[in-house]
Image (cartoon, rainbow, N blue to C red; front, side, top):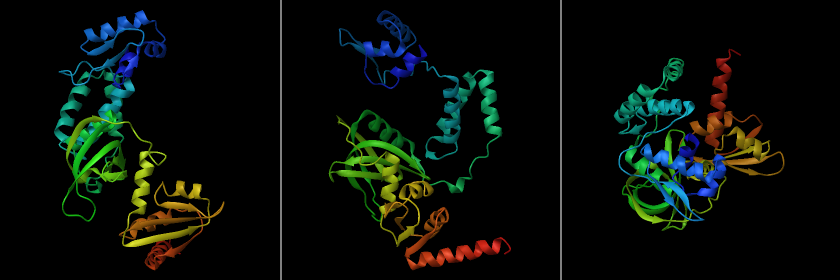
Amino acid sequence: MLRLLSLLQTHRYWPGAELADRLEVSARTLRRDIERLRDLGYDVDAVRGVAGGYQLRAGSGSMPPLLLEDEEAVAVAVGLRSSAAGSVSGMEETSVQALTKVVAMMPPRLRRRLDALREATDPAPGPGRGPVVDAGVLTTLAQTARDAEGLSFDYTARGEQEPTRRRVEPHRLVALGRRWYLVAWDRDRADWRSFRVDRVGDPTPTGLRFRPRDLPAQDATTFVRRGISRMPGRYAVRLRVAASAEDVRRMLWGNGEVTAVGESACVVELGSDRLEWPVMLAAALDAEYVVESPPELAAALRATAERMVRATGA
């Protein structure tokens, strides 16, 4: 029953034969279990016939009972505690209320696990957080991306004062660093874009579904990182590194544009308005490298290196 519910809660349409095969049960047992779910309050739509199947209906009144495995229950509670810290605007009070209900329903053994995790963990200080995003905006973006539904919203681009209306096909949300990004196909510009969620306003689903396109990157996180590295900035950073492009990408955690210039050498390029970030990335390189530009970065690295040497007492 738990496995059946877990599959149905993806809200996709499941052909009956495929669902029975996944659960390793007969079609008759599957029909009986579907009826048991309905008795518990879940609205499950059924299509009869040879090509028939089942789908869990979304938004059908009050929320039915939710079945969670032990690990899932602990993960939900941990996530609610993080939300209560205030990283998403409007979620603090709601998260505390939901957390109270979840913990109240937990058996003692799970409460002990959650308490142990809390007591052994120090939360990150608040000032290090990035821009706070609106919970309603985040939820709308997530739902339309999940359901492959068109979306329009107001967006204030970098360096602009007034927002413009964008029409997009949302692909996926990415939490990177201290910011949220929406990766989407921009219909008016006929190209892929990543949007800072804290700059999004008045998101409105269009009600029109679309066929998902192939993202021109390994995944959404890689796409966002690549876009950030190509953003124009005050400093155009270029490093020549004596290591393979593959190794350097791992050293830099996916930041910067890395271009191979042989099997054991590559060039790293990125734009930045401040030098602190390029200095930290350069310090993370476990290989010899040369600063090709800008000269200000070379001076910043020299000053940092001298300070580090003095710190060792040498």
